[in-house]
Image (cartoon, rainbow, N blue to C red; front, side):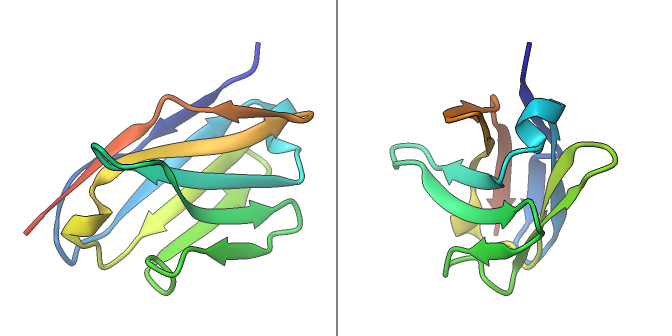
Length: 115
């Protein structure tokens, strides 16, 4: 059984910060790349950030310089640090990885930013 489980979402005021966590099965965490996506109501899911097994990170333009993706290989946990959040960051955030060639998704964690 393999899984991704997100946590850490909640309500936060504009300008604030929070950290999302994704507990991953080792078979998924050992893949070449993992990612965070987000989806707002009525919108399509969008890529937020990726990180390779070697630690190289890339970000969507909308979150660059505000969000940080990282991974802890000892605990098989993927993180997303959200700084200086804006109401436009409100969405369900999903952890994504691969089991072989098959994509795997977590259930998502809700982030709501109030102004």
